[in-house]
Image (tube, rainbow, N blue to C red; front, side):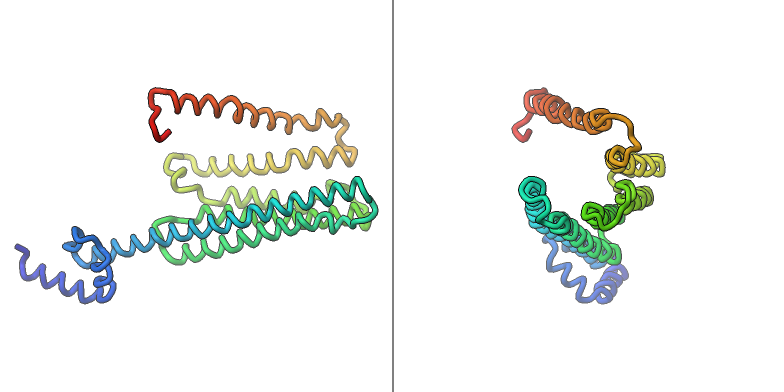
Length: 275
């Protein structure tokens, strides 16, 4: 039997926690109701945090389910308007009207990530079981990239309408700046906690990701810009070698590696009804 002193200490703790302990006691399974009130309160807080995290994920998934179809609609509309501009009436539709669906898609994506960033900052202010700091960097990266894309399209419209006379490389200047800022964001963004636990040299990992992000994002645009501006003497087929290489790798993964992996899972020794 517990000593009178211990029982009195538990009663005082319960009185201090007040309504929180009472609510925790009422919401806990019967097997856990014998725990001290302070532990009940901690368990209840953790349960509330888990529910809040799941609710945030559910809300984000619902928004994504609505945003993606709208973005696809804008991209399809842009393709149709571009075909009309190039084939039917080249001097009819202004380039600003043709590019406007792409601007709308960018603004929609920026709005989504601004909302997501606001939710992440709220989670940071309210301690939860998950640390969303790495997701803040992802949202910032997307916002910076889309802002650079909007400004680049604006300069591209001015160039196509012959309002300004600048090279294509200079036209893409907001894009280059956005990529550089994105690389810095990529480097200073903390790693995903699930990944960071298995990596010893975390700074080297972040540096590698920043270099890969900037290299992959900037390679093909700068090759095309230099070709159009006359700085690249190679043929278009040679200039598109990085793109061919990427497509070949994608085809190998999609049509060879993934089917082999699926067959090994389905018919291998570890195959199960779930697989």
